[in-house]
Length: 177
Image (cartoon, rainbow, N blue to C red; front, top):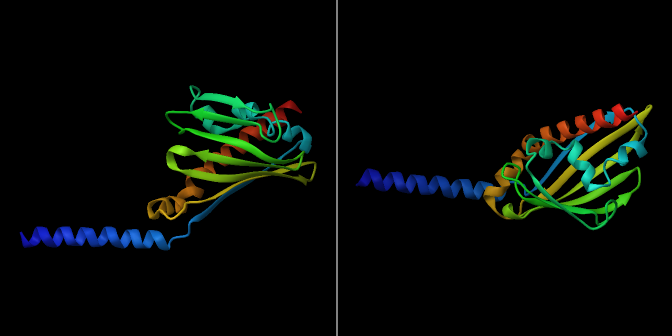
């Protein structure tokens, strides 16, 4: 009985320690990836400012072709939005919140099932004969210590998806010429 009591107390102490460490972890996370596309910014931007166009290049839509998508607001530009339901990619929504044509698109991303909200930016800059596209997403994991552990993993979890999405975008835009 003493051994069981020590084991339970030791386990409770370990859980408490992990929770305290989780509270000390940073709550903010940021993921960023870039690529250069051999095309002018207006050709690239045409694939960014319309939610329906994202289906062709983002990796999430390719991983789940059965994803249910509902668009709302204008077809493109500020307030263009969509929501999705996916068994493998999660349920979420995105709305474009600010646009500087051929230069920058800012969006708000929500995953209500996980209580996560973040801000993303696609920045276009001249690069040689083409355009450098930098995709950033950042957010706050809040006070939940378990979520803060996930915050440490966001770059490793989401970064490769950004890389694949940007590679798909590059291929589509450059193929169009």
